[in-house]
Image (cartoon, rainbow, N blue to C red; front, side):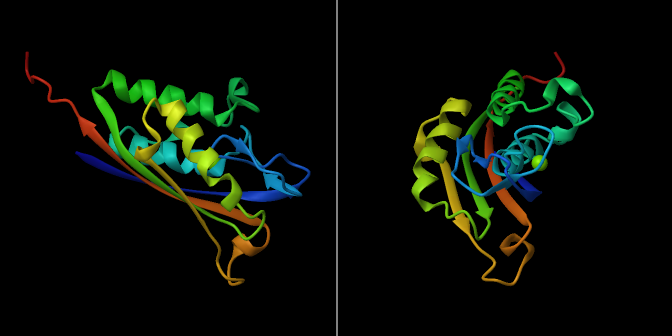
Length: 162
Ligand code: MG
């Protein structure tokens, strides 16, 4: 088993779509970024890549690459999942925490779990999504949104030195 951690932050900008874990949440503001800026999916992908010691999403999907402008992070998540599968890794489970005071996310959590699970090809019970706030004390109460993720991968034993 291998464990990985991911963390990401984006600025919240009025008029931007707010896509979190692949689900568009009605909101006056959304995360700014090169792709769809799905901060939660980005943290999750960094956790998955971190567990495999394969770097981070900036290495595979650089924001200087025009091919990734406006791209759905669910497309990137499917690519990361394939990359891991090619190396013999499968998802044990993942746990994502989104930190933001607005919009309220509780009505969308189940859809977020299902969307992530579908894009990683696993049952929903392997994927947790939670939301919390900084109780008026932090940047996620104003201009920002943050996400943390941990992921556990299982590794198929490989025959070495052949
Ligand atoms: Mg990001």
